[in-house]
Image 1: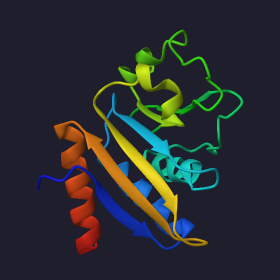
Image 2 (image 1 turned 180 degrees about the vertical axis):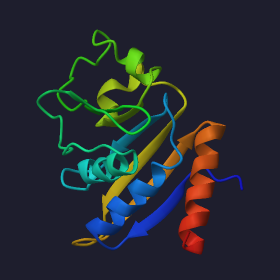
Image 3 (image 1 turned 30 degrees about the horizontal axis):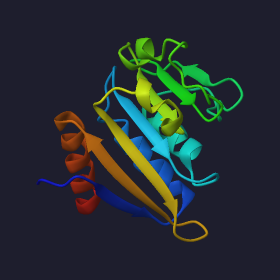
Image 4 (image 1 turned 30 degrees about the vertical axis):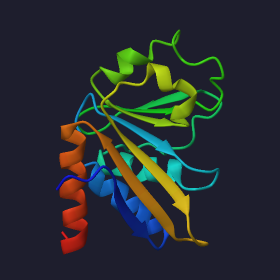
Length: 160
């Protein structure tokens, strides 16, 4: 399958959380996931589902004012970053240490730190298509992320 993007539609916040929880089964330390979408699209909710799948026990909420929150998962940490307030970029924050570190990094508002992001990552775009419905578009950069998307989409299609 040679596709540059993959789309999944969810009908409720619960379906979106469940999709992100399934994605957690494919990620490993050092992976970088970017999330973008309008305010209220479900970026933090998606991160909550991913955190649940990673075994995070703490409540996950938006790191808008703290820029980053770290959560301990079952096998490795989750680094949840909100780059919205980084108008000057994040080059002095040492973000590469997280991106290349021992956890999974999730970045909301990635366009604010585009220059600091690694070239290989999984970009996820969440778009409102109704009150509770969302279009979730996965855009993998790198073969590993493409394989993750192909397997996730196939398992969603077959109900696994």
